Image 1 (cartoon, rainbow, N blue to C red):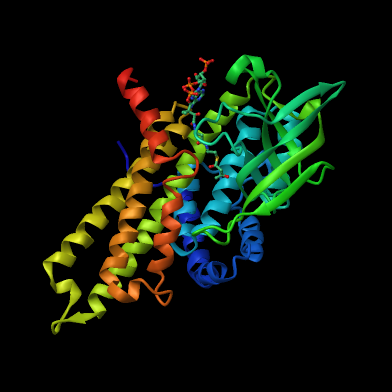
Image 2 (cartoon, rainbow, N blue to C red):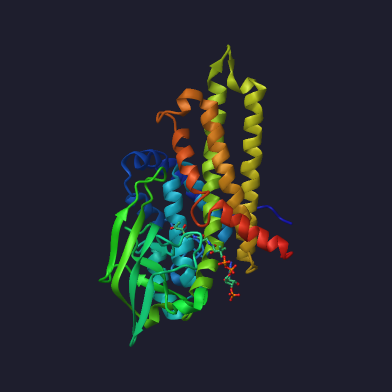
Length: 381
Ligand code: CAA
C-alpha cells in the first residue's frame, strides 16, 4: 500500500492551496457577508484547470484523477467552503454524469465548455416532496416526437442560478417507480427553465441554492442521458462521486477549524498561561487532529477506488458521513476554544460552524449515509 501522492496530485493540491491562500482567504469572508457568488474566483479556477480536474484532456480537462480532485476541493474549502461546494457540485454533479454515463456526442458538446468554466453545471434531483426519498420524483417528462416536454419543480439546487447546464431528473413512466426516472442534460438558457428564488441559508452564503421550475421545457431526445428509465441509477452513481467532493469540503472546514484553534490556543492567555498549556484544550486539539487525518484518509480511499474503476458506494458514504461529522465537531470545538469571541463574527470559526452543518445534510443526510453503509455491511459487501 502506497500512501504517497503522485507528483501530479501534489501539483494540483499545491496550485489550489496557493490560490486559496492568496484569493479565497479574503473572498471567503466577503461572500459570507454579502451572499454574492464568487464569480471572479470561479472564472480564475476555470483558467487554472480546477473546474475539470478529472475530465480527460481530450475533452478539455486537466486529465488528472479523483484523488487530485478531492485534494483540490479540500484546499479551496479551507478558505472558502462556498467555493468548495460550487466546484464540487459543478465537477461531481454537473460534469461527471456526462463523462460517466453520456455518449460521445454529449461529451464533446458539453465537457470542454464545462471544464473551462464557460458553462457551470448543476444537478436537479431534489424536489419539494422528494429529498432523502429521491425516487419520489414528481417532475414529469413526456415524449413528444424528437423531444421531451418537462414540467415540475426542484429545490435546493446548488449553482442553480449560475449554471449553464443542468442534469435534470424527471419521471418518464411514473407507474414504474424508480425504473421510470430518466436523466436529461438541459441547457438552462432554454425557454421554460426558470430560477424561482435562492434560499436564505444558515451558511455557505456564496454558493446559491435555488428553487427551479420547468414549464413546458422542451429538451431534445439526444440530451437523454443513458437511456429512458436509467435516471435513478445515473443519480446514485453520480452521488457516489459527489459524496467524495462533499467529504473533501468537510475535511477542509475541519482543517480550518483546527488551524484557527491551534493559533488561538497559543496566543490567548487564561489564568496567566496560554490556553494550549492546559490539558483540557490539548485533548480537544489532539482529537481534532486525529479526526481530520482519518476523514482525509477515508476520502482519499473512496477517491482512489473510483480512480481504479472499482465500486465506491460504501466508502464514499463512509467518507462523507465521517468527514461531515468531523467538520461539525471540529467547528463546534473551535468555537468553544475561542470562548465568547468564537460566538462573534470577528472570528472565522463562527462561519466554519455555520458552514459545517450543511455537510451533514446535502448529497444525502448522515442518516442516509448510515442507511447506505448498513445495507452494504449487512450484505457483507
Ligand atoms: N450505484 C448504482 N446503482 C445504485 C446505487 C449506486 N450507488 N444505489 C442504488 N442503486 C440501484 C439499485 O441497484 C437498485 O437497482 P434495481 O432496482 O435495478 O435493482 C435501485 O438503484 C434502487 O436501489 P435501492 O432499492 O437501494 O433504493 P432505495 O430507494 O431503497 O434507497 C437511497 C436509495 C439510498 C435512500 C437513495 O434514495 C438516496 O441516496 N437518497 C438520498 C438522495 C440524495 O443524496 N439527495 C441529494 C441530492 S443532491 C444535493 O444535495 C443538492 C446539491 O446541489 C448539493
